[in-house]
Each structure stands twice: as structure tokens, then as C-alpha cells.
Length: 385
Image (cartoon, rainbow, N blue to C red; front, side, top):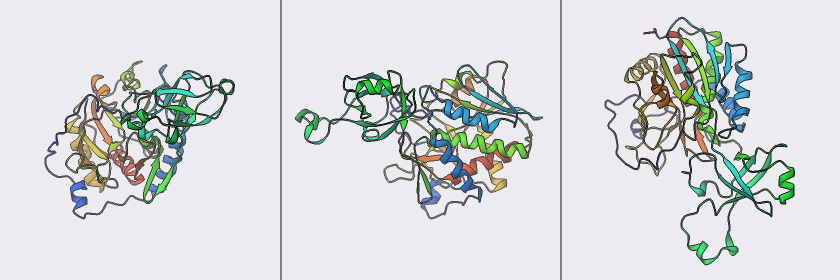
């Protein structure tokens, strides 16, 4: 998911037409969430493993290589020079692409001070609020192995009056402390261009899984688990899974998925959606909640999605008792617009998370499992059109 707040500051609420099952409005009226099956525990295990991998934008190899090992033997596995990874599972019907992005939010070293501190910048668009970064533990992908650092700033008694009065901070106020001298930093293989990712660990909080990189490892988890199931239950479509790179800096990898002779009729993006079920978000802005299934996105900042595919997925969900939600998103974009530009009828399917673009992104694993079930039913039972 990419954040487009700097481009789009409108606060309009969209009317989504007839109410659908499991909407947030029904939930707040007392309708309980639909429970996931026994596979939710296996999904939690998969999410933990994928989210623990470091995959900063521009250095996604730990994620793509893990998935490559998982996909070997299930079909034709290929990759492109930019790093996109594909698995094709041939079938008799139309050509369907299902894509998720491998990268996660990160920082990158821009210089090293004489005392061994690291000046950094975001690895993506500079749109993220500093409070979510300060004091956080980061894992640096140094040349000679991972190094732990803390993102810091001037605090407490050392602050000047001017610093105390400041209401906003910039990247000239933030640095990473790795507890080393400049010589030790160089010896560890830390230099300009070294990337780092949050390292908070993955926590179970009630029914939720909380940590970094749920955006978009939940989409990766859908692709991995779905490939497992289609290996046992062949699809009625010609299916290709794609892991794209550099989504967070502008959907770069997705802009070239249809190259080297690859063409697709239908494209699905699986990326995290937004949950509006927290006290500071109004229901009419984001009528989506955790535990009520993946959201079918009608429009985001960059593109309108296929009404025909939305109707087909609703029909599949209803016939199989799979909860889904509907949403119109703003301040949000995904790889979907690039699939449309490459000629695919496209839909974004978005299992929701709370606290997006933070080190404490929260997901209900049942929503991810419901997304897998939805795609499994569509690909193995829906009549190709």
C-alpha cells in the first residue's frame, strides 16, 4: 500500500449503494464477526514467518527467495531483472494474475558522522509521521550481518528552548545510534545506502497479530497459501502469482509485470486495506472492521476497479459463506492502477489492518484466511467467462 495523503486531502464520504453482508455499520449495531476455520492458526504461523523477514524497498531478496523456495515444484517459477517473482500454474481458462508486493517500509543511511551516528532518510516517500519512528528498534542490513540500532533524537535535559517549542520534526532531527565508533561502523559494513527495517517482534494481542510489515506480507501469505491449495486442487483458470518489488516508492515493480511475452486477462491485487474500527476514525469514512473478511475495493486514489469482478466475487462469497466487505479508499493507492494500464480487468482485494504504515500494524488472521478461501473458490469453481 502506498500513502497518497500529500496528493489528496479531501474528506468526502462515498455512498456505496446497497449494504453488503458483514459491514462495519452492522457490526457496530451488534452483529458478531464471522469466525474463521481451523486454518486461521496455520495462517498466523505463516504471517509470523513472513513478517520476520527483512524486505526493505529495493532490497527484497530475503522475501522473494523465501517464496521462491516455497513455490519450487508447483509450476514454472521465473523472475525478472528488476526482481519480480512469478509462479505459473497452467489451467484451461482465461489468464489470471494475482499479485502482492514484497517490500516493506524502511530507512536508508545517507551519511555517517565522525562519532558513528547514522543520518537517515525514508526508503520510500517522505510522508510518514516521525512519532512512529522515534525510539524504535531497527535491524540494519549491514554487509557483514544484521546490526541493531535505535532511531533517536535530542530528548530531556539536553533539549534547547527552541527544540522544546518545536511542534514538527524533520529528518535533520533524527539519527540512528548503533553504539559504535565510526571505525566500528565501517568494519561492520554499514555505509551510505545501507537499509534498515523496524524490528519490534510479532506480538499476539487478543485475537490480533501485531508487528511490522503486515503491509504487504499478508498479501504474500495469501499467494503462498493459495499456491499450496491449488497444487492439490487444480484451477479452472491459467493462474500466475506475482511478487512485485518497490511498491512503496511508487508501484515500480508492478509497472512491468506484463513483459517478456506475459499477458493476462484478469488481475487481482492483494494488499492490506484500512480498518476504520478505531475510536479516531469515523465509520462513514472507512466502514471496514477487522474480523469481517477482506474488503473489495471499488476505487482508490489512482483507479476505479472492475464492477464485474466485484459482482462475481460477491456471488462466490455468498455461495460459500465467506464474509467480505465493500470500501471506497482515498489517501491510498496500490499496484492495481499499473495492472489496468497494462490491459487487465483488475480488482483490489484488501484484508484490513489497523495502524497502517507503522511498526504496530494489526491484523486478524481470519481475514487473511477468508481471502484465501475466496480466491480458492473463485479459481477452482467459478465458470470462466
